[in-house]
Length: 90
Image (cartoon, rainbow, N blue to C red; front, top):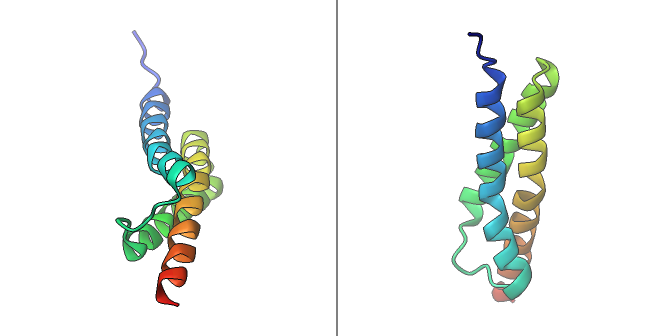
């Protein structure tokens, strides 16, 4: 019996990408970002971006899909967090 290891990559990618959406949904719904660390989200978003690039370079479709999808809500949440922190600073 053969097992295609890329299935594990797709499952891991799906879980990782899916994990970003509840936070982004909450930010969209409430606009509230006070409890979100800009530093943490910046580092995480940068890491997701580089994992995406790595997937493109090697090429690895599970990595490309997971990180490409994951990057969208992560960038949005980071953007809103930065914008809200600027409003609070004024």
